[in-house]
Image (cartoon, rainbow, N blue to C red; front, side, top):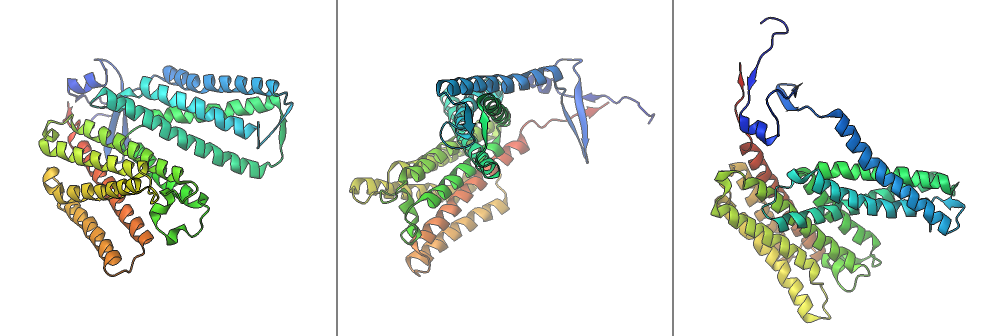
Length: 391
């Protein structure tokens, strides 16, 4: 082959149409080990303008709001932490502007990433993801200022410098939120779900005033006896909302592939949706023994969640066509471990109630994540596959 000789490839027209490409447009080809990655050539000027717009505008507005606040409060020198401080105002403005930027970016720039079957599903998913990432933004910003305060404790700056710093921090926060909105996929939604659930539960454990809560049961964190029961229950409710978003996202993708439009797939989606709703209802109905009907509803929804998960595991062989033998064995392994934990708790009395609840919850949640990961892999293996001919 002659050096620098041009080789042509043939790409199906439907692939070009989906990417809004025309004949003569340039594509970028990158060699990555033993594969070639072909992607549209980004417009550098538009990309830079877009980044500056989403970074500069919120930063400028945040700086102006902060400066006006300092003039109204007649604050000449601003503390790093405490009331009306750099950290407090930055956190508040980062939350507000971050939410608006994420919501706008997801609707205006990342709309194609949320291929939802219905308008209601898309609206619910966009709002859920916006709130979830805003909570993460709040947590990360708070932690950052906690460490900054440790390093520069007692620092006071004039109001102009403080406003500039606040503008910079808010601008960075909004830029990260914009990129997060444009990076929405299965992995980011799953990561958000895990961080929200695990983070919320651990925070409930840490902030609970009853140090020996674990000697009672895991559900104690959401009962009326706990001082911060609302935090634990809100974590369950909001995590269930993110799980519903994940289910809508996966099955909307699968609906694009004809062989997955089956009655079995619909039943699987109904069972997964039911398990998510039951999971959320566990948080809605507080475990309050003083109010018997509320306690009974909590107990019944907890059992309903177990029933849904067992139905999915038992029926997975028929509900998911083309399931691998390895995944089927994994499903039965999870079912066996759930049964073993039940035996060790109910009959052998080896596990305490707290240990039983944590193990059962961990196994059930882990199984659901693995199942949805498998569904996502099925989509990736069957979608957008076509042959490219070298000429």
